[in-house]
Structures are given as C-alpha cells and as structure tokens.
Length: 235
Image (tube, rainbow, N blue to C red; front, top):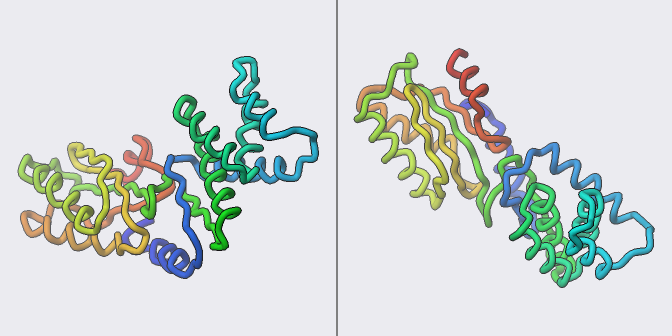
C-alpha cells in the first residue's frame, strides 16, 4: 500500500475490533498457498475414510510415503485437535520445514487451543506472516530524483530507520541500501501507526538534505522482488 492509502488504517481497525486469541503465521507463505491449504484442510475434515491419528503419524515417519500421502497426513493431524498430533507436527517441522508444514503447524496449534480454551481463536492471514503479536512488513523507499545516496546519507538511513522501528518495539530483520533506494523487512505490532512512523523518520532524515522521496510503499503481502523495484524506480 502507498503512503496515502487507507488500507493499513482499515487493517488496524479490523484487527483491533476482533475479540479472541489472534494467531499469526510465522513463516512467509503466499496468500494463494494459504487458501489452497485451508480448502484442502476443510475437505480432510469432512473426509469419512477410515483412518486414525496413529496411522497418519506412521505415514509421516515412513520413508516410503508419497508427497500426496504426507500432505494428507499433515493436514489430518492438524485438524484433529490432538496434543500428540500437534507435537508430532512440531517435531516434523524441525526436520522438514516447508510452506505446507508451516500451515499445518499453525492450524494444529489453533485447533488444539480451541479445544482447550473457551476463547475464540482467530487466524490472521498475510503473505509475509508474523511473529507472536507482530506482523511482518516490507517497505520500499527511493531517493529524491533517484540520486545516488552519499555515504553520510546511507549511514543516516542505517541508523535512523531501524531506530524508529525499534522505538515502537519493532524488530528489523533486514535492511538493504542500494544506490538510490532501500528496502526494509521488519516486524511490528499491528496497532502501531506504521505510516506515521515512517513519515516522521523521513522528515527527520530529510532535514539533512531532503534526499528520501516521501512516496514510499509498505506491504504485508510479499517482499519486493527485483522486478517490483525496477517498476517503482521508473514509475
């Protein structure tokens, strides 16, 4: 979303109005893949084929299991609401981590907590995922008139941008500063006014040369690819 967009504000209002335990997928998984998983899991939940938790655990442990069988086993265990099934998926994730396993582990946790608690369990789906009570975002900034950043300007970006995020109890995972743009991947609580935070820190930096363009982009869908960056630089 762009700096002048109301999308992030709408997201904050929607999440802030939810009553229940929020769950964020900790791994970055494309939204399309997440939807594929949930459609499949609903089919598994309604499947009447004779099987059991023990049988599907054996499928996970068998080196002869096909990808299709592993997919079904993981999903079956995830929707079972069984503590042993959750622990098995948790252990399996350490050795065979991928997008499907990450989704199964998240659903297993939500399903189990739903069984053990009266509190409503809510899954928040974003492409970049999150961690604990924080969402992951990717932000893109470019220099004014696409001028090359000076060494001093680069040092200012490296210092001030992460500091602004950390002051809001956020966590910087990656910052990349190129010739005339920079990107940052970070975690922050969904209640923080991220747009306002960046507007303030850009204004602070621009007191020393007006070198950062005020039209920046924040997204929680995916990290910026080289193609995305080329398009934005020539926009």
